[in-house]
Amino acid sequence: MEILQKAYAGTLESSDAYVEIEPGTQGIQLELNSVVSQQFGQSIRRLVEEVLTDLGVANAKLFIADRGALDCVIRARVETAVMRGKGE
Image (cartoon, rainbow, N blue to C red; front, side):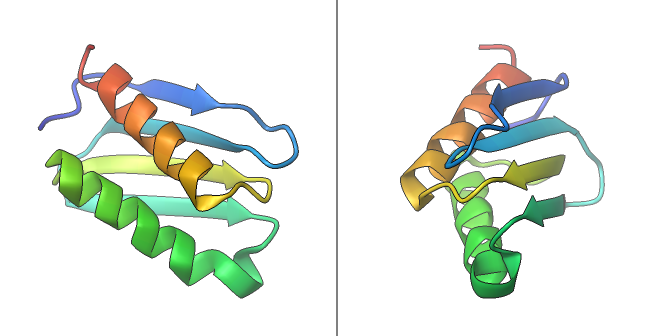
């Protein structure tokens, strides 16, 4: 699956995550800004990579601002941003 346009999902509210995705050419480039990055940064990164792999995204630039979101919220935000980024 190819990301065709810049897209967003989520908010910067507490317990939510804001995800921004855009086309990329050098694999997955992820910038994570999280209030819980010390404890859960690696787990969040693995989750995002898993979602992108499941959706077949091989090249994309992502920025994620996490405000303590649960895994299911992060997954939903990434999936929504990917679908919007591919034009759906």
